[in-house]
Image (tube, rainbow, N blue to C red; front, side, top):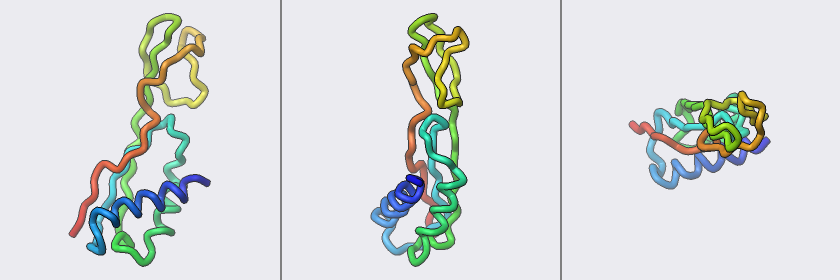
Length: 109
């Protein structure tokens, strides 16, 4: 359950920037190819915010699709499945996006 470590890192990063101020919402972007389970991250976030300025904060998660380039057929296509195959059947792909995990915004009072 690496989502617990990720939740701790997100909360730590926000506290480092905002201090003890009350936070209303945190928006993160988790690419669908990142291997992070959004519901698990939400659960872990609720656990680790206790006793911090984020205690009542909402966690908003954007989950953009991944994109890949096929070196065999030259097609660029959307990819949401961690089993990476081009529609032509090739597995010789370059992942262009979808593995990101970043804090997009923090809303404070």
